[in-house]
Length: 191
Image (cartoon, rainbow, N blue to C red):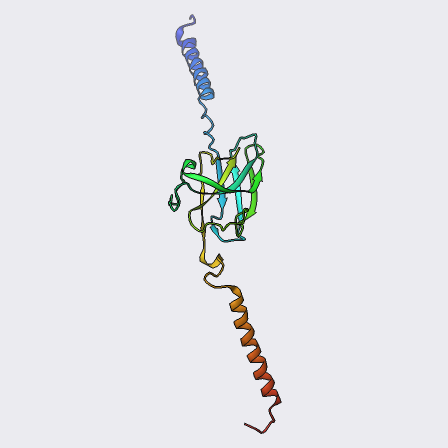
């Protein structure tokens, strides 16, 4: 009885197969998913005084990232709610906030102002929130500029000054006081 291929050959082939499959499973691990940088805003509607939270994810930059307003380069053009290209936008006011990234993440919270820092009126349509790096709109690959929609309940009354309302309320108040005094001074039995 000698040693034959039958005894060791099949065992050797089995061991070789196990080693190859172990090697393939080690080198065949899934590669990490590609990172896509994002600059996200929440909420994207409101009015002056609305608190907006901006969050950077997978944002690897050595410079400070700022947040600002942008409008379409062509006045009155609506770019829709989809993510427009930053080439179609121009900055009108910033910084509303600034942040530094740590391990690719950063965040800040800011208020929507009632007017631009220059004192000019804030556009009510086609206004975008954008991230700015080195004076350039930089939104990353995962999200674009966020269209900010002004909601009717958050806008100031238009078409008239507020002093008219205060005068009207004062006249009604005075009339109620005079009426109350007259009722109080009236004798008990008189009609």
